[in-house]
Length: 118
Image (cartoon, rainbow, N blue to C red):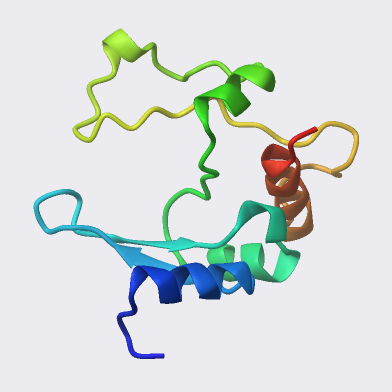
């Protein structure tokens, strides 16, 4: 695969559980995000993020999923001053399935649960 790939190629790689770097426009944040399907989160992938990247580990959720999980926004929509308008919910750890929530294995389990439809 070349350093840049088409959207169909990216989707194919994601279906295989591979991690990709998605780079946005210089007119936006001018950054890259490492992404992979949440349901395929592993302790190895999360450890890679923890050991090699900077910033937060985030899980993209549909609004319906956040509502179903009863995850309130950190900042109410009308008070959100973040330049891109991104909306973060409160941070979470999986209940009764993790030790302290900070290990790569604990975080991978939390990510899998957030992605679960049940």
